[in-house]
Image (cartoon, rainbow, N blue to C red; front, side, top):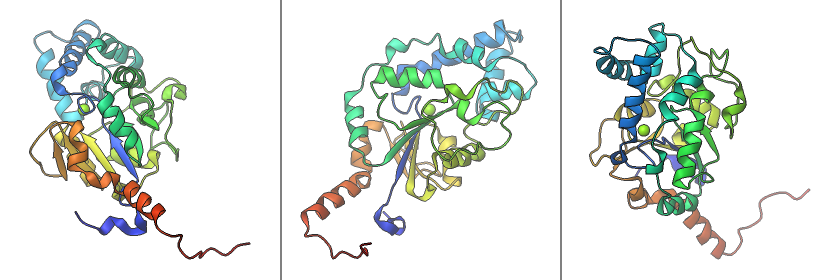
Length: 271
Ligand SMILES: [Mg+2]
């Protein structure tokens, strides 16, 4: 690994995690239920021709990052909360089981840890609770964080909101900010107040990883064994993180070694 980012003694200060299909395996199939619910919403609530729905759903996802973002840009008007409740509220969350192995890994990492998901806050909380990871992250950057009411530019926060539900109602007409747009990553970097050069981003999406790299982040593609352009690492499972990125724990080991050394010469001037 390069040593360029060790300036100041800390290689990585923050770990930014996608959630769905990254913190739990794609093989659980939640994404399939999610897509089915989106298609039902398009049919039942937006009255889109049934034969067009599957292709349109996929095309909009590919073109605009999420199908929802594409629908908005096409001019469909619907309530964001209603959409999320329909799409995520009916997911078989019971498929998600507590993951104590991942929990212990996360808790042992000395860096700040933040979720960065395109999903809504309620879904993020539900997933993290089901996985038993609800207290492993300092904050959640989600749909509501990036798309607050009247939001045109990036919110001027310099901290990570720990609870985005207090941001009121949300834009129902404007352009939606979401991964994989580089602007979404830049917004997340600003909201989390992190140095991208000292931040590692984990995601199961190849295109998200590509954009993250353009935004200056270190990147880990999860759920894939082969590297792709823009990915610094590829992990079959998030559980393999310690074997693939032992440097995450280097700070702590360095600190522990330091504690065993005699105290350094005091350089601070006492007042
Ligand atoms: Mg994902």
